Length: 297
Ligand code: SF4
Image (cartoon, rainbow, N blue to C red; front, side, top):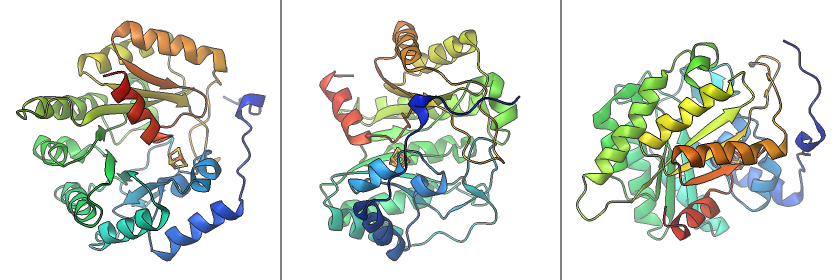
């Protein structure tokens, strides 16, 4: 299906200002990767200008090839044991207080990369103890022991993106499984509640893209499933085809429709929702986390 050119509210310019170029040089100089670059995020200019970035750990080659994602699919390198130290160098140089870390999916590693997440967070907390951390993890092939290991880290937010409704998985996320992704969130929520005195931390978060061909009814089922976890923070944003090799956009939601989506998600029982054309799960993550605390979500 061919869709018309982007509507006016989706024509953000990627401004390569001197601040953006400085951030890019610092990240490249440290040998780090970001999902901002690898996934061709439309918010890169805005986030990099403030020194914000979402670090892509475990390399920039993914073992899966989701149709919506621009991250390269290939044979990854062994994990970089210095990655935590490099991210610490970056956050110190930029005065960052809140860091978001994600990764490619590493189906080639026996632990799915969970051990590397643990190492990176431990190194970061040793080097920058005051740093607040949000993790956006892959599904670790559904291994609950790995999910519990990672949820036990001193982090503010545990995030795993379901990305889309169950009915779109085969088409745009063929290596993943909707029920498995829900199970990742469920396992994280249960494991957290089981920790005496630490209930409520970390927050459980997920992200959804719209415009891939989902129906209203399917979205309603998705929101209900997420509310049952319970997910505390939900982000909803427009899917934008990152290249001609990726899945096409089925439709563009106009800015008013995000308010309706928000109301639907609230009606299903999700308490903190951030929705808008350019919302991504890591977009303004520090502020989103702070707002969720203020709302006592
Ligand atoms: S929204 Fe997230 S992925 Fe996009 S540029 Fe900002 S930090 Fe990077």
